[in-house]
Length: 283
Picture 1 (tube, rainbow, N blue to C red):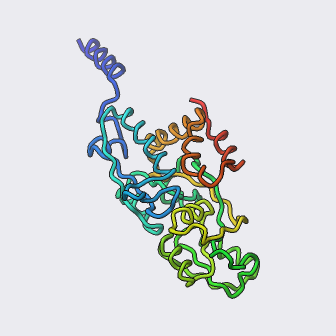
Picture 2 (picture 1 turned 180 degrees about the vertical axis):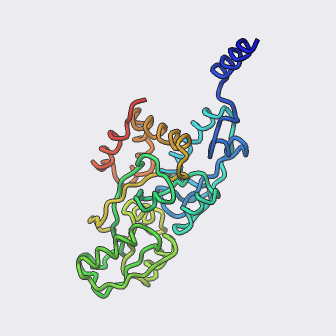
Picture 3 (picture 1 turned 45 degrees about the vertical axis):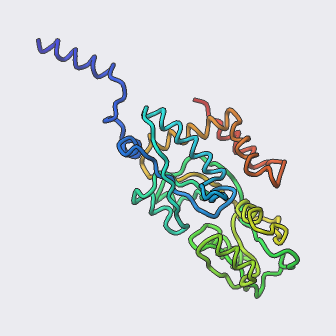
């Protein structure tokens, strides 16, 4: 009798489909609450921003929507999206404190940040540059100039390194957001604004008068962008990685790229094309 009972239990174990109780971490939390909390920056077009209707939109937001669709299939349950705006300084702690479940925006993947959060496969590649008002001759002439940058960003770190290495005596002005940086530039409180080049392009395109700005072609850093998730949550991160790989293998990610970046460039950067090929990991 004992042997029969053991056999029944073993059979039940192997044929029982993945149940709600077997989900752990973020997946368990999402299934239980019926919602996923997407953290995003409100003023980083075309990566993440509020559109004219006040709805979160952008390249990274579209990627996160694809991930949400796959999560629904995984847990076999409908879930709602709750968008949570975050700042540059609080975004990683928002993940740690479970205020958000995934960070969608223009977030640079670094090893030091990986002490706080985990990152998905790379979603974009860019670099930091400068934006000025058109007609301002600042290229190669930063001495004595006021250069704005959002505090708590990798651009701020790289900017200080750049000026230290080149022995440029410029005044770095730390700002709280991209919007504040754009406003400071327009009001000439700063001479240039430093940020990821792709974000600067988005800011210029969404400004009232895009032709008022000039973006320097030179990059002074390499910025590999990725989505951020909570540490040590392999099952949740794997879903995000699988979606990104599938988008790259099928080349659907190129359509998402063209949707948001095709407005100002019909030629995709070679670095992005290489990223797509590297991310196209087979199942």
